[in-house]
Length: 446
Ligand code: AMP
Ligand code: GLY
Image (cartoon, rainbow, N blue to C red; front, side, top):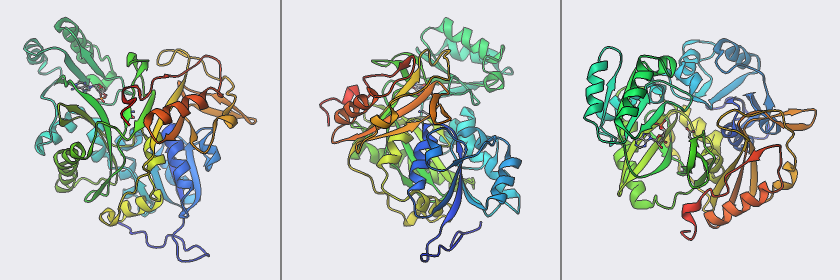
C-alpha cells in the first residue's frame, strides 16, 4: 500500500492537497462533492459523470464509470491522487482491484472495497454466508438455484408467511419480493430461477424469513481493520404518503433516528459492526470504504437485512451534512489504515431530506423539464442536492426519476421537515411530486 504523506505540498504550508475524482451522478454524489470541496485538502475536484449540482462543486467529466481503462487514463492525465466510488456497480466489477494491480495506478487512493469486499452487496448469498460465519444476527434463510429447485419448493411449502425472496445478484434495487401467499411465492420463485426474471441476478435466490420491525441505515467507514460509525439515518422507500405504493430508490430520509438511542446503537456496534469489521480483517478482504448496513429493529434487537458496499441515497444527503469532520482527512486515514486515530464529530442538529421526483416515478416518466426556483429555495437552514438534473445553457432541467433533494436542519425532525417542505414550495417543474410526510412518525418525539 502507498501511504499518503504529502501527495502534493501546498505552498501555504505543510498541508496535503490533492486532485480528487468522484464517480457517480446522484444526490449522494452531489452531497459528497459539496463536502469534499469544503476541504482544504481538495485541490481539483472532478465528478464523472456528475449532474447540474455537482458542476457547482467541481468539474463534471463525461466518462463511463464502468470503463476502468478510461478512468485510469484520466487519472494519470489529471494527476488524480484519490478516487471515490459512489455507486456499487463499478465496485462489484472490481474497479479497486483494477487500480491496485496496475503499477501506474496503484498509488491512487481508491475509496471503495475490492471486488471481493463488494460481494457483501453484490451477492446476497455471499453476504448471508459471511454473516453466518461471523455470528451476525440476521433472518434465517435458504438458497436455491436450478440444481436444487425442488428442494426450494419444499422449503417454501414449509415456510411461514410472508416469505421474502431475494435475487442473489444486483437487480437495481428491485430484486427483493415480499410474498404474502405461498401461491405468490411459488410463482415468483419460478419466474426468478426458471424465467430469469432479473436476468442472471436471479439464477440463484435467497429465501428469507420475514422480519417484522422498523428499519434504519447504519454507515461504517472502514480501512479494513479499524472503523468509524457515521450518523445513522432512516430512509423512506415507498412512493406514497404513509409508506404506501411502490418501492423507490428512496423518497426522503432523516438523521438521527429517534428509536436508535445509545443502548440500541451499542448493540448495533457490539453485535453487528465489530464482528463485521473483524470478519473482513480475519478473512483478509481488501476493504477501504463504506459498509452500509441495513438493519431492522425487532423488539429491542438489531438484525441485518442487507449489506451495501457504498453510501445510501438519499441517506447520504442527511448523513454528510451532519458530519463535522473533514471528509478528505477521513479518506486519507482510511487509505493509510489509520481510522483508529479518528474521532467522528456530529452536528447535533436534526436533518431531513425530501426528494422531488418526476411524475410517474418509479414507473415511466418524462425528462427534460425546466426546473425553476432553485435559487430562492436555498437558505442558511436548507441545502439542495441534485440527483437527475442536467444543465443546458444555464437552464437546469430534469434528467431522471429522482430529480433533487432538499435537505434542511432543525432543532427537531419536525422543524427540519417543515423547512424542506417550505423550500420545495419555491421549486417547480412539470409534474413534480414529493412526499409531504417524511419524518411523520417522529412528530412530537424530538
Ligand atoms: P434489500 O434489497 O435487501 O435492502 O431489501 C429491500 C427491502 O426489502 C428492505 O429495505 C426491507 O424493507 C425489505 N426486506 C428485505 N429483507 C427483509 C426481511 N427479511 N424481512 C422484512 N423485510 C425485508
Ligand atoms: N436508500 C437505499 C439505498 O441507497 O440503497
